Structure formats: C-alpha cells, structure tokens
Length: 97
Image 1 (cartoon, rainbow, N blue to C red):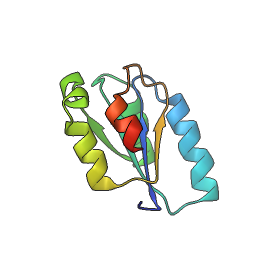
Image 2: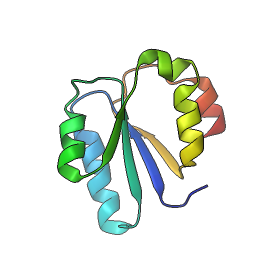
Image 3: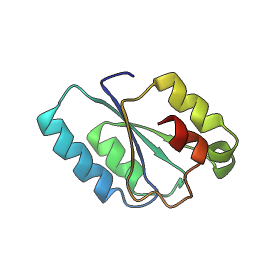
C-alpha cells in the first residue's frame, strides 16, 4: 500500500472530512489527500478547494459498476475514510480495503 495516500468519501458539508484532515495534517503532514463525493452540490467540495485537496465527483453508477474500485486500486491508498458518506458502500471495496 502507498503509505501516504488517504481517500475520504463524503456526501455533505464536509465538516467531518475537514476535521479529519486537520487532525492528521498536524501529526503527519506528508499524506496525500483525496476527497470523493457523489454529490456535485456538497459543501465538501468547497472545503476541499479551501484546503487545496484534490477531489472527484462520481455518479452512483460509477460507485456500483466497479469504476470507483478501479480508481481506488490505481491509487493504492493506505486508508479509506467514510466521513458522512450517505450511499451504501460496495462490499467489493470493503473486501479489498
């Protein structure tokens, strides 16, 4: 696993995602962060921009057809965090990570 990659899945305002980012950034500043959201209107996108975190907006179909799993596999993250993510998370991703 890539020891410096963390992906946060969020669907709403992103306050939990921001708090997690701030906590780990103080203790381990070398992490590369990504935020994935299924909601193009989620405030987590604005928080990601403010914090200079890359983000990706995806569809429900992409989550369940394996596209997101393929993206995650290509990134090989150390950690995946579900922070206010409102969709049922695919068992295929859970089994791998």
